[in-house]
Length: 632
Image (tube, rainbow, N blue to C red; front, side, top):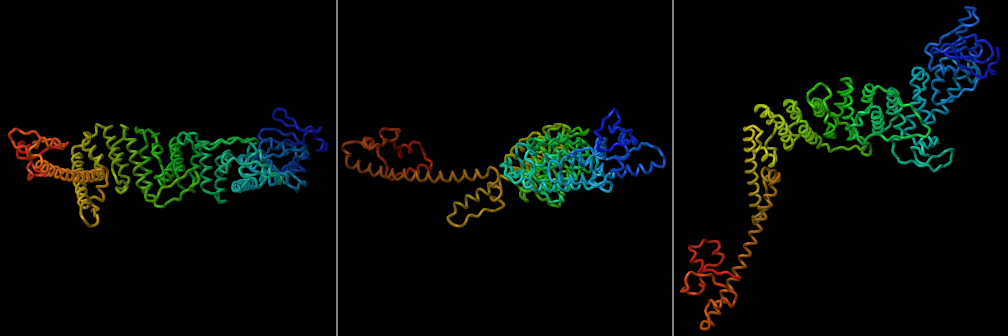
């Protein structure tokens, strides 16, 4: 037999591989239907498994034999690499094949026991020195573990890759001197890059911590799930894990993009980092994603959960997954939006929207006892509301939801009622939104009986309606007569109480002394509601106008007194020269016309003042002409 070192290579003919060693083959190894015609000596000297097979076959006294390698980890190409190594041919280990070559070497028992520097030790050394220290190579090797998962778990290849990736996510990559071109355009996810101790000056474009989302999104669902759990055990922040999960879900669930506008992750193009996207089952993916989501709350996270629930209803996931999503949404319902709650009905239901699902979410909101923590404010565009506001915000949201779905002609009144009463009475300080929703529903369902209308309207507390809503309801012809009467009754009560409060406020203000006291059951609540503040202000304005009028009348009285004195003086000094009418004309006065020229053209100094003439009615027009005059 020729030495292995003189073998120049292998060649293939159909389903057969041959070694051009110049000697006939004495062993045939079959791997996945391909026949490798090889020689015993090179294989036995390196492979413990082949040596054991040859020893067992010596009892047959055959010069050549055929063996089939069952459950070989890897493809025939990987066995060809192992065979070349046995013949002394140079083989190339890469991040893409190292896991399979390592697994195949372990399967073939190519340990140092059968030769120093055997394939197992070579693969192990390459894996630890080259793969685990490089982000790109580690991701590629992790992706290749899928085909040889049992063997990779046995050799701890998978756990080492997961731990390495998790550690590098938490660390500035520039500290490890990773290749710059790995991120394209001489950039990496951390500060200036030190390459072999030299500062290259390459800087990152941003300081975001989501640079690794795109890379790990190429992993399969099972590997991605294990990686997220490993990262969680390593203490990576929940908001970062949630961001990676959301990125992964949006990439492989296209339906999410319809409700997540502007929320999709940034696509990164790598110069020398090409990975094959994973082939995933969307239903399995969604069920796995739901289990990985952290128990946190936030606006963007709630919007993502609502989109995930829509896709779950379309894909028909199991009941457990759907209920879990509804529970998660219910625990942060105050952060939801109206468009997120408008979930279409994907079943055989006649209604346009899935009101049953929304009602279950509201029930979860009311029954949730534990308060889940929020993400950090700086991540995921997450916001929270004060602890005293969630109930009122949810009530306002549900009222808007009812108004939106009320126009559906197939929506039953019982559904509207059950959804409206799902929240307690204290959640609605005013019932205007609820009245608007019910009015829209009754308008779209004119065939409802009076009894059904009354049952719906009984949900409303008419004492919590604003003045505008009461005015609208009192003239609403669609409402039952009994309901209109109730509205009018409470409207009158509100008017009386409000007017009493206004009068009390005015009396208190006009009092000469004493502090301003307003009863809390009158002005304290009702005067401040809706339009009653305007009424109080108008009354105060009228009071100011009256004071101005009184001042003006006083000025006129004073001027009138001066004119009378001047008239007396002029009359005494010039009685022989001119008449009183001429004197009045000279000083700028004009006597009012009188009925007879024979009447005395004099002014009675003892007559009533102008103010008295304004406040008291005159007995006749003749006396008014005689006792008054006007000033230009």
